[in-house]
Amino acid sequence: MIPWSVRWREPVRILTHYYTGIHVRDSTKTIVTPDNRWNPLAMTWETSGRNPPTMTEGRSYPLTIQIQNTGIDDWTCFSDRTFSLRYSWLRSSEEQRSNTIIETCNLSKGAERSFDLTIDTNDIPGDWGPGIYTLRFDMYIDTDGSIARFRDEDWPTYDVRVQVVPENGGNGRTGTIYLPLIQRGTAVLQKHVP
Image 1 (tube, rainbow, N blue to C red):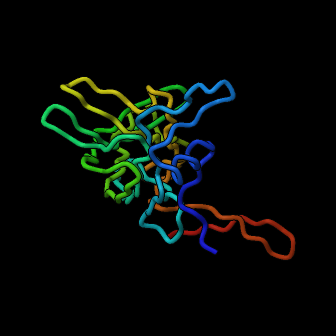
Image 2 (cartoon, helix red, strand yellow):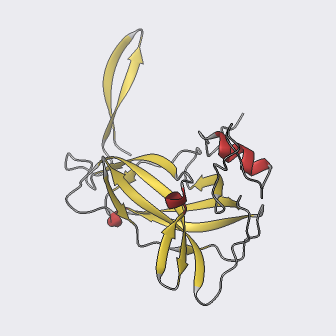
């Protein structure tokens, strides 16, 4: 069985995926879903699995993401209004938005479409260095130069954890990693150079 390439943690994502154009209410009948919503349906990385690759500083990685408009309105773009998908790099409480902007215009409510984008590690601030990061995906509305994120209306972002490693592997040799090798119950480190 192939694992899903996305995982939703919020029940409202599931409800609005199957029942688009609706609002969810709490026990007091207060609406708890905003008008503008989206769901990622699939993320396809150019790796053998469905997980994001280990990323190397200074490199770019292609990604195809399938998204669904789960809101109550169509994403119709005009000369003064556009919808777009963007991502940010997160480390601790710091966030750096990428320069990548993918227009998602003219997607009807309930409809889905795939978009190709490039994840660029050069967007990470130079003083952050290698480590574990979160890629945060969100939809944006640009109305006459005023930019609003769907998360500003309390719709969840979609976050993916990734590892970024130094360009030279941190030890002077590109691509050198150490893997545990188990032999008759004893763990041994074996050097692997691709």
